Image 1 (spheres, rainbow, N blue to C red):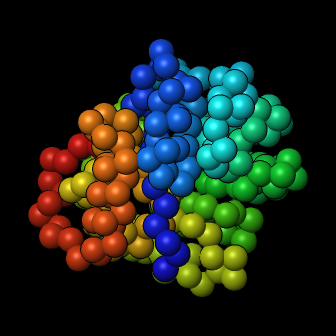
Image 2: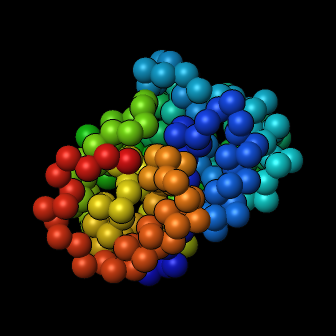
Image 3: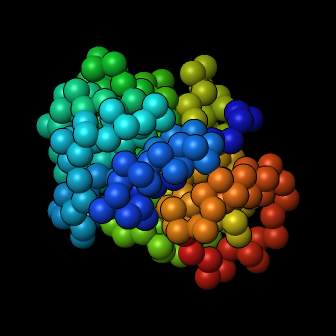
Length: 233
C-alpha cells in the first residue's frame, strides 16, 4: 500500500482568507490541497473556478488536487491546466466521453482522476483505469461539506482496491466525504491511499495536530466498523 496522503478540502476553509488558510494546512504537513469546483448543475452548490485556482497557485507549493463536480468538465480542462492544477479529477457521470476527457487531461500535463458518486458502479471505470492516476470514491453524496460518512461505500472501496492493484500503473484510491478521526482508519483499512478531509482539518483548533491525528489513525488500519455510524467530516 502506498503511503497515506492527507488532502484538506478548501470547501471547509474560510473563503475570506483563503491564502492564509492554505498556508496553515501546508505548514501542518498536508500532502495535497483538495479544491472542490461546483457548478450548481451537477451538484446543488456553486464554488470557484479557474481564476481562483490561478490566484491561489502563487501562494502554495502543495499539489493542487482539483475535483470538478461540474457538467461537461472537458470544456474547462485547458483552463484548469493553465491555472496550475496538478491533478484534475472529473466525474464519470458528468462527461459523455470519459476516455477522451481523461486523455485530454494527460495531454495538458496533469495527472488524470475519475470520481464516482456513491450509487455509481465501479464497472463504469473498468476500461479506463490504464488512463487514470487516481480514482476518487465519494463517501457522501456530493455538493456540501460536513456530511455523514456513508457506511455502504466501504465494500465499494475494498472492491476498487482489488481492481486497482491489478493495474500496472496502480492508480491511487482517494475517498472524499465524512473523513475525520472516527472514519480515517475505516477508509484506509478498506484500501484508500488519499484521504480528503474538510472540517476535520480546517475546523480543528490546530491543523498540524489534526493532520497528525489522521495519519496516526489511518496507520492503525484496525477500525471498529461501528465507529462509522453518524460520523461527520
